[in-house]
Image 1 (tube, rainbow, N blue to C red):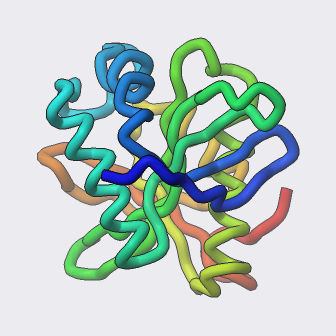
Image 2: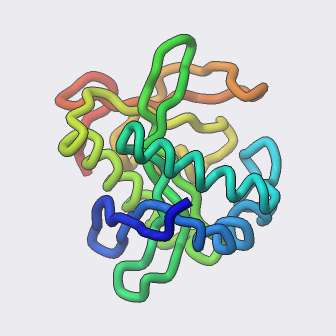
Length: 181
């Protein structure tokens, strides 16, 4: 793992940057060991899984120029969570998923929507992709609201990771949803 990070993009209040090994303590303590934060994931992550998570994201960044990134407060550099764009296999199709997860202390401030909209803009304008998705458990109302704020619409329901998952999608310049406020 490397110590260097790269700022991927900034929004009004946030900076999203690549992960490094120094992010392990934050990810482990504030996200992966918090049962409320991890409520919609199959299990908590231990310290070794956290290191593997960082390595997986670094590999994705090197190979595909996309991954989950650390969300930081632009003014204080305080880490707030992670958000980004990752490859997902959905019923045999490779899709680009916008994901987001915030520490509990950052909930309710609009950070998830701001980071996710930043990812959407980055995907459409910088990566020049045509379509993006978010995979959300139906009972995760907060994430559904973020998907709607991005202009996504529910497309279908699938089975993935031994769970029922709703697929929300948006297509650049039309299709499901639109890139509007």
